[in-house]
Amino acid sequence: MRLKDVELESRPCPLDCPTEHDLVLVGRDRLHRLPGEFKVVRCRTCGLMRTDPRPTAETMDFYYPEEYGPYQSTRVGMNLEKSWLRQRLTSLAKRIINLRIDCVPTLPPGKMLEIGCAAGAFLHRMANLGWDVEGIEFSEQAAEAARSLGYQVQGSRLETAPPRAQTYDLIVGWMVLEHLHEPIVALQKLHSWAKPGARLVISVPNAAAWEFALFKDAWFALQLPTHLYHLTPHSLAKLLERGGWRIEKVFHQRDIGNLLTSLGYFLQDRRRFPAVAKRLIAFPSQKKGLIYLSLLPLTYLLSAIGQTGRTTVWALRQDD
Image: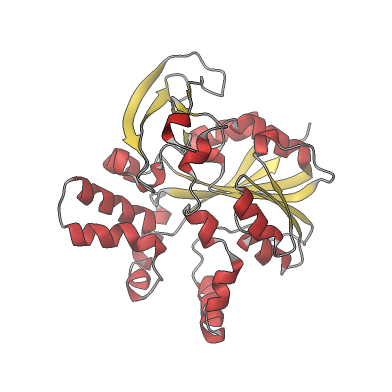
């Protein structure tokens, strides 16, 4: 697909608010430096921020190239490159240092669905804990990588996915909701696929964090145009409620990569300290070492005051 094939559409607030909104900022794709400028607007009634206009669902593929980060970082085979000792040390570190990135409630193993499962790393992890897992993935290439591990993964958009043959005890989605063209349709569909008392666990960027106010269009978690909604805990709660879910817990993730990359973009835009900017932008994709460990106290502090820029939310299915 080429840029000229990308079609844009303007859509109202999904919460059925009046059409009035305010311009928040104009930004661009920073992950892959693909062309185009995109506006972020805020609904005057409910405060939900959205990208408008936006690429249509049929032409958004242009902004998800094969090298898109989550498709690569969730490949299970990547872990096989580590030595046995390194794998053990990594596992131990994750148990000791809870970053709250993909934490789920303590539940007896049952049936789990992951939306936006990418290449299957989390499916693999939960299957090893005894869960019966399935996935839905927009990228056919990533879905095929997950299928190669033996997992049932449907390659489609969540909004257009057909009814499931079973219901689920747990549904998860890591940094997915903000990508969906029709988030309420998706949440209502997940509600219909969930058993009574089921949990929905999702992570999203937190646009209420001071990072967004400080860095604006250089905020790493903005990720235009693939992030179609820019959520705060307040606006997220409204979406979930409309979709049939009630928030139980909100965890502010203990990860400073968001902040460091945003600072790198900020310096890059101003052509200041180019070597430092380059290293900061690359930080999330680098192997974590002593520098990362030395910053953990700061991440714990920022998490405690709700200012790490990303949240993980547990929600409970509301009965019909």
